[in-house]
Image 1 (spheres, rainbow, N blue to C red):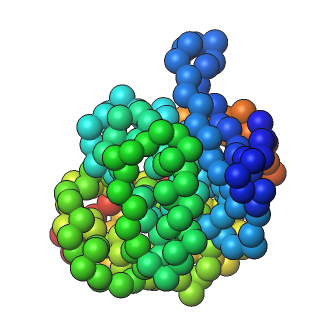
Image 2 (spheres, helix red, strand yellow):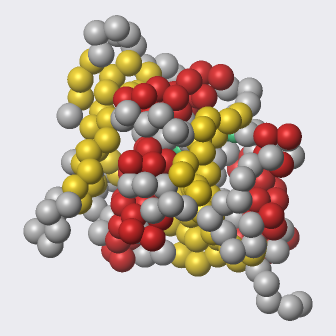
Length: 231
Ligand SMILES: C[S@@+](CC[C@H](N)C(=O)[O-])C[C@H]1O[C@@H](n2cnc3c(N)ncnc32)[C@H](O)[C@@H]1O
């Protein structure tokens, strides 16, 4: 469903409804304001719906847990987690205040008052990064979209996982080139990952959460954690 808000003609509200299948009556609808501006962090990307579906599927184990979303943009996965009872911190680049405004706007559209929004630029060990509380899960949807930024994302994730050794990084990415890979970087930063089949959380569909995303895009999901195997 798409609706324009009267106060700001450049913003459209998109609704996403999770659940409500034949198996379970339980459902959640969230509204995400998208800004009609040509910037990456203004829209819900196909990977975000898939990650939000994973969060929704695991909502029972996330109640009361602390989650940080990196490169959140309009923050669909983080908003779903917060609506399901997680303590959520949303972040985007400290140099992109408009994207941080999007995080705040998405919280306001869903009546979320306790969600913290911080500027965290990948690869920078800033005071805001160092001062984060203990984390259980780090979320990142479509944060691997510019190969030149891959190592910066992984440096931030590696820093956070070393500080929170039992935490996991849940990430979805859109396949844009067969040549792109983060495997060597994960090994370099002593991280490991497992691939999560989309079918295991009912996300293997071109339409999810009542939206036409992910459409024809191929999205993959990984869980990244510290590699604790001895060399
Ligand atoms: C492709 S968009 C994905 C947005 C959102 N996670 C989604 O899937 O709908 C990439 C996001 O990363 C953010 N970003 C780009 N460079 C960044 C950086 N150096 N540090 C932190 N965030 C960054 C952008 O502002 C944008 O919100």
